[in-house]
Image (cartoon, rainbow, N blue to C red):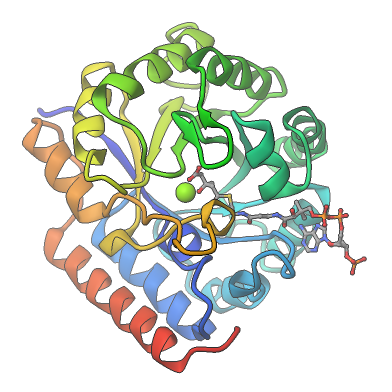
Length: 312
Ligand code: HMG
Ligand code: MG
């Protein structure tokens, strides 16, 4: 039996958060449903961040409400930056029966400047913000993920020391995240540069590849600016990583990693991820035709939003 690799599609969150045009909540819900039907293990549905910072995802409550009547058969996760976001997410989840949101993801960075730009807080301050978020998640038996952005390179500070990534991994583990997710936010990674980063994270985890729930402890979240993401996936598989994030059709990019003349790069496409992982001899459980269907739909709604222009 080939070994299984977990896939999370982050397109509804990372893929859409940077889109300036209007995308209807019903279309986002349909995208989540199509991704769930494709056989990916998790879908990152939306963010409970400040709507002033990320207007596209201001409909987080409405989107989850529209999914509640018939919960997609997939692990549904949401991004939460602080206690206020956690309160919004958990209040809604409770009103909807307590089992719509399966996982909560907090996010910090290996670069102080990026952390300030993305969350108006230093790395240490983000860690303090997460404590009550993780307590609330534990109380409700929600799984938790801790993202670290800029693990290879920061758009503001340049090269990032893998040792710093290891330190931030330890900070997140110390406050009790169930799993780590390493973000190559600007797609700078190569097999040579991603290796020491992964080794630093594996060391912080004391080599533990699954958590108490039996889920992988380490995920790689790649953006694909220079076409090196698939090679990084192959390298990560060799090092024992069994969980990856992608966005169908390669949508996406963090708005706070964009510059005035360049949009932040898209995520590695889930289609490329599936192909790369399966060609390396692992199983994903994804139906490629259904994934292509989700991808075509995602491209249509994004194209329509770009044509319509305007702020959401
Ligand atoms: P702040 O302005 O410092 O927040 O932002 P504050 O605590 O001072 O509050 C200011 C106002 O925001 C107040 O409202 C708060 O109530 C409100 P006012 O009194 O002015 O009306 N507020 C909120 N409203 C709704 N939901 C909330 C919330 N929190 C405060 N949760 C904050 C701090 C963290 C909120 C802000 O910086 C923020 O929302 N940042 C999110 C940025 C973001 O979403 N970035 C993209 C996701 S990360 C990413 O893409 C990287 C990743 O993909 C991995 C990779 O690729 O590297 C994960
Ligand atoms: Mg990202």
